[in-house]
Length: 65
Picture: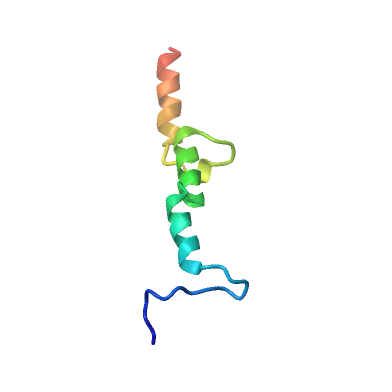
């Protein structure tokens, strides 16, 4: 019997499907957090940001004139 509803367990006895379900309900993934930080500002997240640095510098210079 190879039923997809059968629970699959690790060697230690952990229910794999239960862990996957709980992970899905847990909130943001690691990559989602990195993206959110990059969009809102965070240390070392420049590579994930979609901010145009040149455009921001021009806006700042325009305000300071």
